[in-house]
Each structure stands twice: as structure tokens, then as C-alpha cells.
Amino acid sequence: MRNIYLIFLTAVLLSCQATNKITKADPSDYLENIKSELKKQWPENRTINLVFHGHSVPAGFFKTPLVNTLESYPYLLLHELKARYPYAVINIIITAIGGENSLNGEKRFDSDVLVHKPDVIFIDYALNDRYEGFEKSKEAWSCMIKNALKKDVKVILLTPSPDQNVNILEPDNILEQYTEQVRNLAKQYGTGLVDSYELFRNKVLEGDSLSIYMSQVNHPNRKGHELIVNEMIKYFE
Image 1 (cartoon, rainbow, N blue to C red):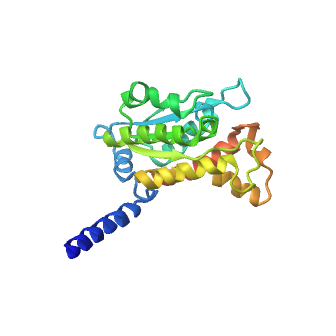
Image 2 (cartoon, rainbow, N blue to C red; image 1 turned 90 degrees about the vertical axis):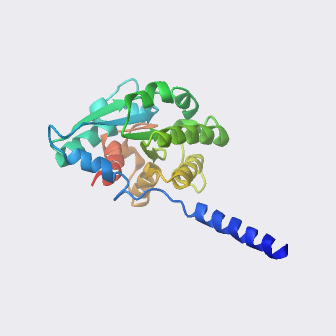
Image 3 (cartoon, rainbow, N blue to C red; image 1 turned 45 degrees about the horizontal axis):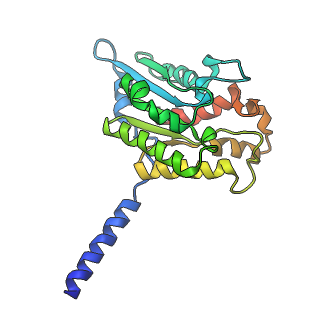
């Protein structure tokens, strides 16, 4: 009996170790099938749907109430994609709503996001989730991720872009804590990750003022959105 117990315990431990090896997706091959589709020419090609779900930043808000759609990261990404894939038909679909958090975003995920039959979903809610608490937001993100993966939809998560009221160099600040939660979700579910927070933090560490990249206290300007796109485009190269 003791030997049987030891065998069972070993099997459980090995299973746990295998589970822990799940990690975030590699940008070089996560969207391999989609990149193949983007290269096809008419009449073999099809429309590729990219959905951006989140709050005011992907919705294109700059200095409120100005909405600068064409300089926000979804459309800057489109510009970069068309330079690389001139034969592709690409739909940029914005389901983001200014001021929204992931709890509300999860409630309309099926009706507003999956209804578009997306090829890739970008989720960007962490900046607003700090007012809702870690557990509730984690549950909402997890639900959206799992529902997308069930439909064989690729998912790329974004960590929060800055709020200038939060010291981005202060260890364990509130945005850094939510950043870590998003990173862990990407590892847990094997999704893509665009670490916006780290991109901006590195610019400050290099000596730049955060204000160079911001249109107001909590919304990036074009330079800020370009930082995000420069990381995002790696999934399509």
C-alpha cells in the first residue's frame, strides 16, 4: 500500500510540475496561422478580424473628451500591418468603452466581442481595474480568456499604461501589482502578452519624463501608443 501511495504522490507532483511549465505565448509563433492568412492574395484570402476590448486607451481617448482614433494603438497597428501585408483585408473592431472595467467588459463579452468572430482579441482593462479589486478583476479576465480560447481565438493581454498620479518607479505600486496579475494570467493560459507598463517604466529608467508619452494624466499620446504598437507588432512579424 505504501508503494502505491508513493507512486500516486509522484504522479500528482509530476502533473503539477507540468502545469507550472505553462508560460505566456512566444511572439514569434503564437499567431503563425494568422500570419499565413495575412499573406494570402485574393481570391484565396479572407477578412482578418482584430478586436480591441477594454477601456478609454484602446477606445482612442487622448485629452478627454478628444477621441483621436487614428493615432491610438489599434489603428497604428493597422498601419504597420498593412505595410507588411499589402494583400490582407483587416478589420479593426473597437469594443472598448471609456471608463469601463473588466467586470462590465466580461458581461458583454459574448454579445459585443465574440459575435464578431475575431481572429485575435486584445484585452486592456488593468488601468481601471484597480478600483474593483484583484480577485474580482482576475475572475473577469479569466472568464473572458477561457471563453475566447474555447472558440480557438487567440488572445493577447495588455498590462496597464501609466497614470501619472502613480509613481511608476515606486516598487510594488498599485499598477505594478495589477501588471503582475496580468502577467500571471498570460502564463496561466498561455496567451500573448504586451507589457505596456514595462515599456513606459523602461523609458523613465532611461531618463525620459513620462509626460513625453502622455496626452493627459492617464491617457497616452501618439508617442505612448507607438510604444505599445512597437511591442504588439512583434506578434505579426
